[in-house]
Figure 1 (cartoon, chains in turn brown, green):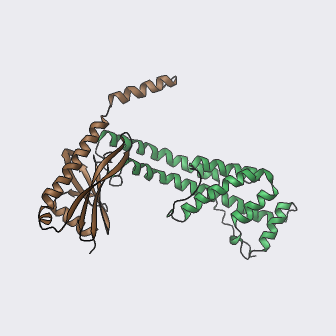
Figure 2 (figure 1 turned 180 degrees about the horizontal axis):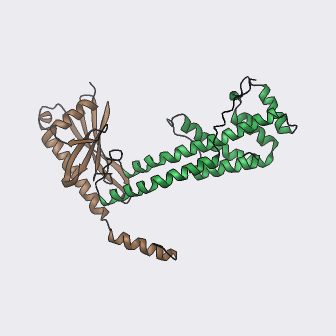
Figure 3 (figure 1 turned 180 degrees about the vertical axis):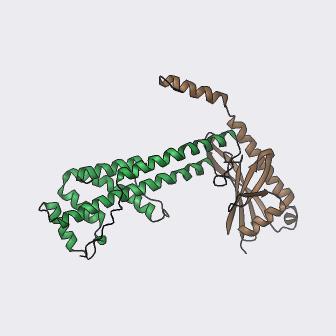
Length: 152
Length: 180
């Protein structure tokens, strides 16, 4: 494509941008809804027994995220307190390579990555090498992740 | 002082710059494609990038810039040090060369001659035209130090340096020195 002046170049660019218009506000809302759903699943399903026995306490915090195309916004963090040990579900954003969202699971001994996949399925990165392996995020994979990132 | 065994393996800043541009031409389309795929929510079949935020993608590709900046400063240092040794060896009579011989006599090994406090300060003292370029180059030495020692602290560089900035600073210094 050859452009003869700046206007022509920008006209071609904006025509293409219009045809690929992305509703960033809607994308952000879907991401924040998915986060809310994830936290509900964790607290009301996976941690239900532990919460009933008061083995863990759960609280929420807020984090400011700045993303390209979306800008600054607040997203909730989920904090698990187990005795004197803290585990944090910390959202990273929705503009993620190969996923539509990412939450870092941070413990004292390490971190794991949760990725939001199509049809609002959450996965957890089990291994990166020799090949990337993402397993579904469920009670079993949460247990394995906690064992890895919490103190022995 | 023991004579140094020169390797002849040093690179010119032009060679480093050409290499950087060639590599950037290869990697920039991949970066643009990744950004497009993220915006469109398309799957990416590359475990290297899976799960990265756009900022992390940018940081990944910025590694090439860091490498180029490091290499540019190192190439300039090699040229300046070779010139230093050449002036000492040829026993030139100008004030700068005499100053270099005094520095040379004070060191047991050529490698312990300091680029910053010995060589560059001598240039600044004897060749006024190099004052500004030397000052600019000393700024990027802070960047090189940070890169060479693993970037584990927050550097106070006073400004951002692109590879092009570092090339210009190195080029201006070598030109002011008359060093190839």
